[in-house]
Image 1: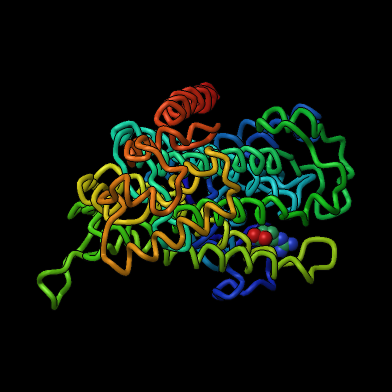
Image 2: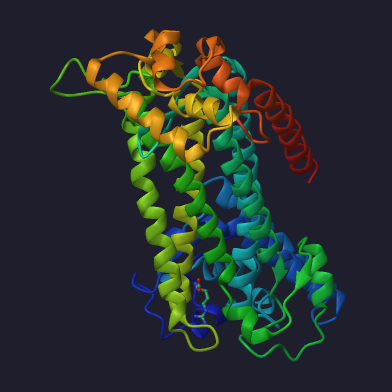
Amino acid sequence: MSKTNKKNNFTNSISGNNLEGDFTSSIDIDKQMYEEDIRGSIAHTKMLAKQKIITQNDKEKIISGLLAIKKEILNNTFEWKSGLEDIHMNVESRLYDHIGEIAGKLHTARSRNDQVATDVRMWTKKTCIQIISKIAELQSSFVKIAEKNIDTILPGYTHMQKGQPILLAHHFLAYYEMLKRDLNRFKQVHSSADVMILGSGALSGVNYPVDREWLAKELEFSNISNNSMDGVSDRDFIVEFINACSLVMTHLSRFSEEIIIWASEEFQFIKISDKFSTGSSMMPQKRNPDYAELIRGKTGSVFGSLVGMFTILKGLPLTYNRDLQEDKKHLFETASTTLECINIADGIINNTIINKDIMLSSAKNSFILATDIADYLVKKGIPFRESYVIISNLTKELVKKNIMISELTINDYKKCSEYFEEDILNLSLETAIQSRNSVGGTAKSIVEKALSKAKKEIKIATDHYEKN
Ligand code: ARG
């Protein structure tokens, strides 16, 4: 069936292109979109026949050729040619090999400009859904580890200084919240990408009786673009996608940073499994948190793509300019880095040993209850600012004498303020945590509520995307 390399009207029509040259070629990157490209072409062909722009017979031939090409790609027998620049021309050229000159009818009422814009949008929508389901998995892992640590106490930090005691579950649920925002952001990106561009032609629309609404339905788009010039040159959704990825990566990078600190010899709050750490080639005692470090490092590359994409767009006159071809490099790399990093973060969480005792003793060996002691006096009627000074002087004194708060007797307290009574001795990490029961606080009762809310939310999010 195939008569590759024969000169035909297609190769003639693109003559002037440097068939050997790689500079203008994007095939190594955009072949990732072959599924979308072929799907778009099949839908376009059906629409052309429905509108009697081509015959039924042409339609059948074109579709059978496109399906044969898809099979070749899937079987790895398709020969990609960089001289044919991109996915669109590689497919169209191969169509000639399969069905001869009728292949030339496929591109009626279409330009590569509205074709590529539509393909990239389909790809982006598909990838948003993949990322959404990966984020939901990661959220589940945070919820699971939070559940297991509903009684684990550790210091909560501000400025990397021990501040107040918290439950580890509360700490992990903070990441759940960040990821919830991320998930919603990808829903928004999905709807920005959900606009069908075909029918815009090269820039000004097409002079054939195309049915854009039908095409949108066929390709499962919710909307069609309103302006052909904007349609072929709009890549805002790619910026939005990379922005959403940048924020996921920011969150993963912050998590990685904590993992790295917590796994350090100084902290020893956790032990990362050997699966997600590596040995040093020189220092046998070390386990390096390379996986977390790489997430942190790759975040920089994703930010680079965001700047790259903005910079590609900022000087472009309307409408399509070839600069736009560079968009896919940033889009695809960002998507695969983000998906990979979400997976790795998930692996780290599920394979890390929590040293609960070390976390607890780190909280104990500190002045972490100072705020609670100050609050005790406030509740006896002393203004907070005054109480703050009293307790600040007390802790300075204790630090000097190397005495812990837990060692104080009622007499020591009374020396500080006559308002102290016996019940101050009941103050502990547990009671301090229990008392922080404002909505969103670290009290166990509140964290338990947050956990069950999170589980419901994950179920709703995943059910929705499993159905669609
Ligand atoms: N490979 C091109 C891209 O990704 C396809 C569109 C080419 N259009 C053109 N007029 N040269 O942007």
